[in-house]
Each structure stands twice: as C-alpha cells, then as structure tokens.
Image 1 (cartoon, rainbow over the protein chains, first blue to last red):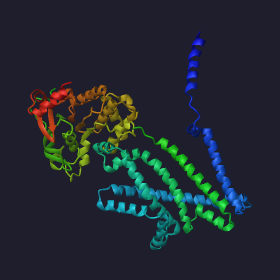
Image 2: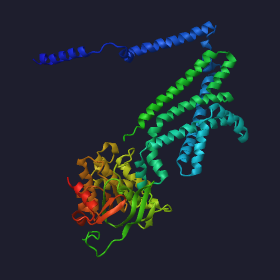
Image 3: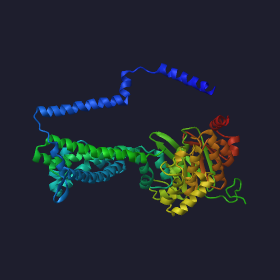
Image 4: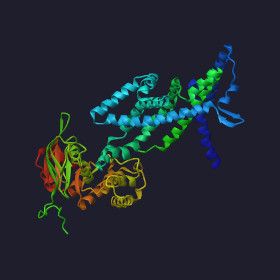
Length: 286
Length: 258
C-alpha cells in the first residue's frame, strides 16, 4: 500500500516535469557549462592558431627552449635566479612602496577635501584635477626630467613618487566614496557620546567603510602593478625592463613578451583571489 | 523618602540644567525654530510633541549641538553653547541621546557598543567599562545579548542597547528623539518600560514622542510645538484636560482617538 501510494505522486510529478521541460533553445545552450567550455576552447584554439600561423608565415623561429634560463640558472656556482624573477621582485617592490605612498597621500587628500579650510579644499581639488588630467607617461617625465634635477631625485625615487601621486588621486576618491557610504547617523551617534571628529572617524566610520573601500582598493593594487610597467621607459629595474633587456640581447621578442604577460597575469590574478578572500572577512551585517 | 524632583514638592526647587532663551534656527530660508524659551530642571522629565516638521527633533538636537542654533542662548549644565564653545565635547558627554533609528555601531558587538564611549572618551579602564556595561545591560533587561552584533537583535532590543549605551556614559541628561517610532508595535512597550524605569530613577529626560500613555505616566512638563514655536507648555494633567490652544486640542484629539 505504501509503495503504490508513494509511487503514484512520483509518477505524476515526473509526467508533469516532462511536459513542462523547455525546448533546447539557443539561449539555453548558451547557459550550459559544457557548451561554454567548448566555446572557450574553440575561441582560444583559433587565437593560438592565428598567432602561430601568423608567426610562421612571417618566418618566425620559435625558440621557447631558450626561455627557462631567464627564470633560473643552475651553474657550477649553484642555483641562481634569472632576470625575470628579479624583475618581478623589482615590480613588486616599486608597486608596494608606491602603493603605501599613494595610500598616505590619498587619505590626506580625501581629508583635505572634506575639511572646512578653504585653502585645504582648494589644494585637494587642484591636485586631483591636475593628476587626473595628465597622462601617466607625461607625469613620469615631469617627475624624472623636471622635479628630478630640482630636488635631486634618482630614477627609482622619481618613479615611486610619480606612481604614488598618480594613484593617490584614485585612492582619495575611493576613500571619499567609502566614507560617504557610512550613514550620517553613525557620525551623530559617535558625536553624541562625546567623540571628536578624529575619534569618530577612527573608531566608528573608518572600520565600517573598509568593506566599501576594499573591492575598489584591491582593483587599485592591480592597477598599480600594471602601471608600474611604465617606469621601464626610464630604465628602472622591474619586470618590463627585464623583458626589454633580454629581448635586446636575444631577439626572442615573441617568446619573452608572452612570458612577461603571463607573469603579470599570474601575479594580478593571485592578488585578485587573495582580495576576494579578504572581502568576505570584512563583510559586516547592518 | 520624597524625591525633590517629584511634582508638587516646591519647597526646594532644583536648579536648571538646560536653559533656552529666544532660540532660533534656520535651514536656508526655512525657520525650523522660532523664539524657543524652555527650561529644564535637574531631574525633570519633559515630553515634547507636535506634528511632524514642527521642530521637535531640531530642538533637542540643538541641546547637544548636533544642530547649531542661529539666534538666542542655550546653556547646558552651566556651559553656554556657541561657535566659541571649546568644551562642547565635555557637554556632549553629559548629554546622552537615543535616536529614532537606534544608530548602533554595526561593526561592534553589543558589549563593545557600550564600552567604546567610556573607554575612548571617558578614558576609564577597560575592565571597569565592561563591568559598567554589564550593569546597564541588566537594567535594560538584555544581559544575555552582550556578545551579539546589533543586526542579530530585534528592533526593541537594539533600542534598549542604544539606551544602555547612553547610560554607560553616565550622562546627566538623556535626550530621546522619537525612540519608538521605528519599532514594530509589539516592541514599543519593552522600550517604554525601560524609559519609565529610568524616569523613576530620577534621570533628567527630554523626550520627543507621541506615546501619550508614557507621557502621562512620567512627564513633569508637556510641550506642544508647531511651526518651530512652543504653543503650549503645561503639566500633564492640565495639558491633557484643558489645553489652551485650539491647535493643540485638535492635535491631541487626533492622536488620542485610537
């Protein structure tokens, strides 16, 4: 008895499902994972084929076997890192120092912009407009060829200052938007228990705005790593400079640029993954 | 023992702790407050009512200077409020405020919400602040919620935490800005009960509320406002039985209808 009564609704359900099962439309195909994987594979295949075929037709001689030595060398003297990892280290060093500088400047500019001092506000807005409306390359030349001699900046210092200033503009906007996302009532509650503006910001508003700032801020870390490549034009030792140097020695331009691009991609992807982990940690219920 | 604050014992009148004289406040061209004269004695309970937009909230927000008044004088706990007031933060420590939207700090636990003011502003040791916080959580009847975050509590519980947060500062005056207006009906009473207990303990309170049952129970003075002016100010028995202005009568009949 139990079996038949249990089976009957199940069959009924099955019949109903079969009837409402949608037709295999183009839109449904697009949504399927297996189809997406095939599409991706075909697309990449075409791209790679085009690159290889194009290179062959122009008589390019692929020499991938010559690439690994630029990552590491094992000689009689022992293991030695090659110019690419060293360049990556340079990129990371320049990016992280520049980012720290950009954070300090960015917070300062955001604070000045919010301040009631008319001069402070004007300075902040002037800074933002100037930096946002200049190409990064021109800014770098300004720092290296103009400010460099005046203030005695070497090329690394000039690069770091330039990148710090350039990204400070974006960071100050991120900070401003993050702070503005915290309700006014939070400031009022903090004020009403006698906190100063600085205390209200430090203990109440800033911790709550972190979750608003974190996604654009990690995007900015990635942007920093990417834009740091520009300092290769004044021959500061970093990843892109390493690539240029290797190519000028070996003429392996295809292999090395692919490799350099791959290293950048791997680095920024790792940062993005770490960042999304961090974001879930800072999620706050409201 | 007869409390000096009890209505009718005029033998020993406590001093004023809040004095407002000719206070006006403008938002652009709009006159939010107009010629406000109000005195609050130590231990007095004042309930302010009136239609929305009448300036009730603006009035009490001027008392802790969340709004800056444009004309007139406000003296709170012996300090005149003005642009030159250096110790405005000292005044604010003595004037607690409970908001309509609770405004608890969502990134801090209940206990941290209660201790951050005493620790950072009053500079008392952490252990003492925690002990104090637990005492006041008991007083608002939610000692078991200390380690939760505000979002995990009901509206009524959140508002009671907000009251406890003000109490932890051991302020001399408490301002309530429509503390039950954002609450579901079944939670209003748990908050009002706490407020009645506070009133019984002799706290100086200025409440903006439309809870007339509560007002009857605790108020020493009722204030009716309209268009930024105080139209009526009287003890509750006279206020409810024989309001002088027609506008106040109409308002009362509307909100007491239900």
